[in-house]
Image 1 (tube, helix red, strand yellow):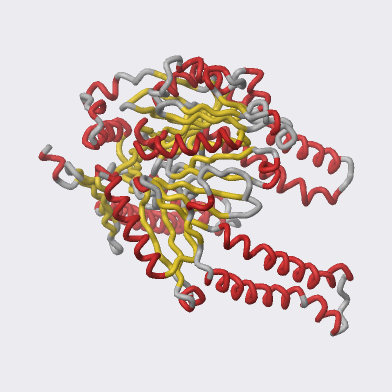
Image 2 (cartoon, chains in turn orange, purple; image 1 turned 135 degrees about the vertical axis):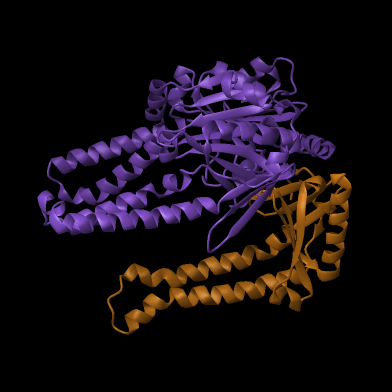
Length: 164
Length: 442
């Protein structure tokens, strides 16, 4: 993190370390599914069907992509973060393609807190902040449930204050 | 006011405008089924009697349906709402709150235009598909109603005397002659390429390559529908200043009208495709809340026009650009260069955008962010600070190596955004900090 960004990385609140586990389990599930799908040509070959030989490399490709994904996952999760400022919320993400999204509290339309089965298991949730513009939607991943609720309350309060 | 508290019916010819195709369809079915009879056989002797009786019966049934459809379609205007009830067996009751209305448009399908009727469309703020339609009224009556309702919606400029509205056309801001429209359409690079592909496919087909037919037909159809859409959206195009906004009307078969109050405009984009620049032509598009219920791209408020017309339109849609020399700033915004305070991309951006880097730039004024980007088709977008919903900073690996960054300003109502492409990363940082303060001020 050498390159300067609008707000220093240290001031952000990062995702909970447990979120990495959620991502890894999700990675394991998806990778297994993709590997199984990529094995189909090989299976057909075993049953004696004519399959172009280049199709037999798909499992290798799937494996390489999955391992690459796993390799950068830790850094990706570390790069996630949010920052509550006086008048807006800043969310950042990305390692190679870095992004920061600023949503002024006054533009907020509604706040959602979601948690899937995997996230619930680790006591985490995900907060989504919606505005009138569909591209201007902020996601805060890997929040501990209590923190997520509190953040939502604060955001709603700040939004009401700004609306006046 | 009292008469308007009561329910009123639409024009009696309304069901016919919707249903004339059904009558033609019936006649067509009859004709097809009696094809083996001669004219004399059809209309002579006992057969004439039965033909007349069944035609009469069909007509009566249709008329009864039309009558009930008309009878049960009623509308009512109050000081706060528009109500439209319709349906005989399945009744539907719809209403729209006047203070939630984004726009009231007048549309004229082909059948309605022949009969001098018009349909009122009420666009509601929530951006959903549910457009309230009131069909059909006499055109003059529809216009009068629209004026009245616009007045009640609360813009003080819209308080107009009903008589004056119909007679005196509002001052014309821009119109598009047919020749210029056609020229402008075929001077767009994607259409030229499509045309070239179609013609070369056609030639190779005529020279005996049968196989290309499979490619020729979809290409020609796609190109044709695209060109037709462009023609339809620019044909007989008029933009006039009205109600502290603009009213546009256009259409080849159907005449459509939109009014765009300046206060509802979220973002504006001026595009100058490659060949248009030589002729000094521009296209102006806007993001508006609510209006675009049935089309997917941005609303054109000027399909093709000169810089003069662009200036006039911008003067209405964005009266306060936040600078003193608006005209010069506009000129710089739609052309190139860094005059009047524009900040461009540093030359480090050249390897990343060899064509565009020289022309990219932005200017943040007291009210608006102006940004210019694009290579062949050059675009300038205008995003008022108050309309920005969110601001995104981004940096890819190649940009990082060259100490560049991009900033996007996202808006509601469409996909136009402010786009500060590949600017110096320190400049981007300063801009983000300054802009977030401006966004908070509202």
